[in-house]
Length: 501
Ligand SMILES: Cc1cc2nc3c(=O)[nH]c(=O)nc-3n(C[C@H](O)[C@H](O)[C@H](O)COP(=O)(O)OP(=O)(O)OC[C@H]3O[C@@H](n4cnc5c(N)ncnc54)[C@H](O)[C@@H]3O)c2cc1C
Image (cartoon, rainbow, N blue to C red):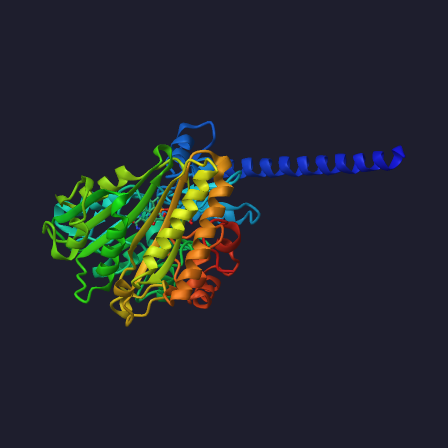
């Protein structure tokens, strides 16, 4: 009777000892990798958990999802040559996973940080220079969009960067990038003319339309599957002041808001100078439903005709509509974001119809009500906006999957559901509610004949979405990844991000 029990206990003990031994060996291996990195790089490039630089780096992620991750060390290279050295060292240890981070605004846990291994934090690479031609801005990947606008505004030039000033360059541009001028000039990545990339073997190359064109196109939408981009050269356009801001309305205006958005999207006189992000918001902590719209016009024209459908809606609780510059807009949007909480972003794309927005809104209300009934204090936002225009010429080709002849900017609505909460224990329930919403919204869109397969990589939920497959370019991207990274460092060792295989 006692013998089998004794045997079972022995097996358990052996397993515990084996796993403890394995964990100790892995920790020793990581200590040695972090020490080697520190000894091969100039001083202060490797931050350990006891260092202030480590806390500064982890706390500068936008959300708790990644702020709470604990790498064994954070390496902060300050040049492409140092990035190359780091990759060469890390690939010698193929069982050591690592993360790559620029601005740290990814909403999916593990996309740009990692537990118990190495994070490459690129924020020391943050120069922004306007080149001699006065048109191209050369942006190191660790800068923020606020840094870029502060250089470009005084020169009366601009580009499609992040609409909140703290958003980073690397994740934004490698995932597409939707800026204020998206309806005029397309995705942010379409204006990129050259990238400096560190490949898996440590080579530092320049990719553009003449050299490594396949890689150049893949990096515009294909995210971190091919190498680490250290510098982005981007064409700017002439741009003076703009008009816009945020308007907050009571939720009694919901029907009027949805009608205004439907009319705006259905208009035959499409005005690409406009941009609208209409957010239906629930703030659980005060049990308040609101509508908050970001209205933008790329000329300093107050209350343009194209946006009258939104500016006429009353009552308005607050409005910051004014003439300002792009930095002013981006700083305002940054100040309205709700950082440091747990979050999940998820997305779907639809064509417009007279009834679809009402149905999607009502599904969102049901999903929020279910979560509130379970005492989850969430802030939830259902945001409607447009898809950028497709690349205007073959030299601007990207990997997002919209052909040049298509008109997604007119035809399609990008839906973003973002949810925020503080107690990590609520994560599974919120995630389940978000997935329920997306599934039901997709079913509804299919029934109405307005479903579109595109999932925007920078908004998709890693738990249940797969945006690179939605672009129809997966096979092409796989070929490029095999060509530039034959041993699959960016597929296996870099765990976070959308994978190709
Ligand atoms: C407050 C807020 C506002 C936002 N506003 C917008 C907006 O206006 N428009 C829009 O389109 N999106 C917006 N987003 C989404 C944003 O584009 C993505 O979160 C994007 O990934 C952020 O880029 P990052 O460099 O900060 O991300 P990171 O978290 O640093 O990286 C994201 C991913 O990109 C990879 N990556 C980063 N740098 C590199 C590099 N140099 N080389 C290779 N791979 C790299 C990382 O490995 C990771 O998988 C917003 C997000 C937030 C939280």
